[in-house]
Structures are given as C-alpha cells and as structure tokens.
Image (cartoon, rainbow, N blue to C red; front, top):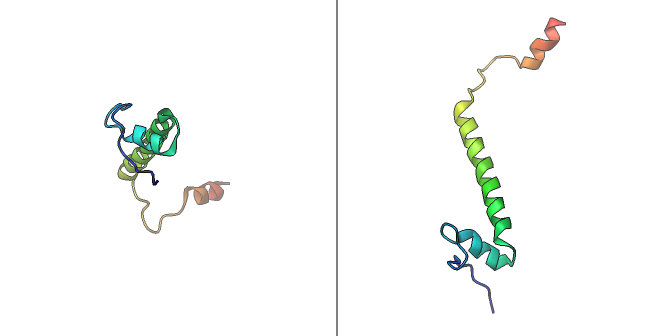
Amino acid sequence: MRKKLYRNTDDMLLFGVCSGIADYFNVDPLIIRILFVFIGGTSLLYIVLALLMPVKPKGRKDQREFDYEEE
C-alpha cells in the first residue's frame, strides 16, 4: 500500500501542513516546524538583503585592493 501525503487536521497549528509531512515521514511534527521556520527565515532574509543591498558599480575595485594600496 502506498503512502499518501495529506494535511493532518488532528495535530495542526495553522493548516496542518507540517503535521501532515511529519506524519508521512513518521517524525515528530516539531522537527518539521523548526525546519520550516529556519528555511523560511533564511529565504526571507536573503530576499530582504537582495532588495536592500546596493549593486557594486562596474569598474570599481574591490575593497581589499584599496587596503593593500594604503600600505
């Protein structure tokens, strides 16, 4: 018999997605929830930094090169 992936409404916090994944892989739902928070937080941080960090102008030297020239 094949396993199927379902949202678990018996042990859900929001929509039961993490609980359903945990049930499918037979692990504790807390582990899946922590992984979702970590991965989601990392992805969100990357997107925010990509929007906020300025782009390096073309033809500009690296900061490391400036440090060596001062010596």
